[in-house]
Length: 157
Image 1 (cartoon, rainbow, N blue to C red):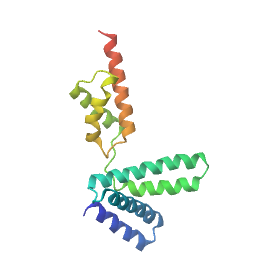
Image 2 (tube, rainbow, N blue to C red):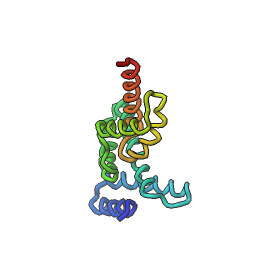
Image 3 (cartoon, rainbow, N blue to C red):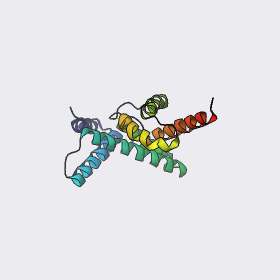
Image 4 (spheres, rainbow, N blue to C red):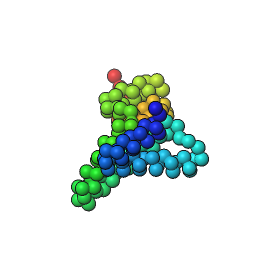
């Protein structure tokens, strides 16, 4: 069963069981998928759908931050519940340690030695972790590693 069919089956199940939060979260994702398909004038691939779900999760995290600033804990709980529903469709997210290990492997592969090589590293690393790690977190770890490496090499033996 592909992701589109899984979303539809889960939506039907949520409607039958009266699970409003799950129903709303899945409907929002299905609407985003439909809008993207209309915009692109073709069906989305599984990877594109996963990227879209990840985007929906990031938007909800941003909303939570705003709702907390505004003291709207009721809306924070609603957004958090929707995140929990949507994360079930995403692959397991990499831990910071796993991202760091993958980044170190790519840094060694491309021979990166300073922060100026960030683009080369990211160009190889992002496709390897796409859908399993937040790009901002990956970028931060790469910068830390390259800055640390550059300082260690500048100190000399």
